Length: 105
Image (cartoon, rainbow, N blue to C red):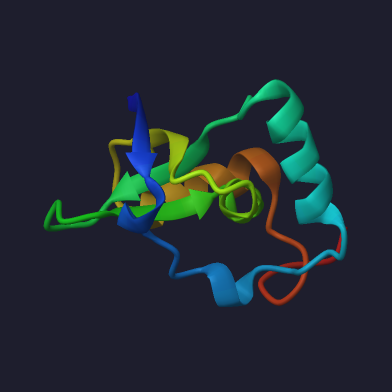
């Protein structure tokens, strides 16, 4: 089960940001797309165990693109599961990320 919402960017825990692969130009292209069409795909989050915050699983480039555009909120989809279950579900659907954590695509 998931809930959809709009949330302030500063409320997101970006703990996996250092593991993300940086692709030059990708954020700029995404920012242009969001500026033209809006944020079409929500970011995926799960709640902290204690309910104090939201951990971003997918959407790191979207968050950076939104920041470049001067936006302070993002559309999110919050999965009602543990962080481990959320990561496993995401990777089962999309495969491991390229770069440090997984095989290159």
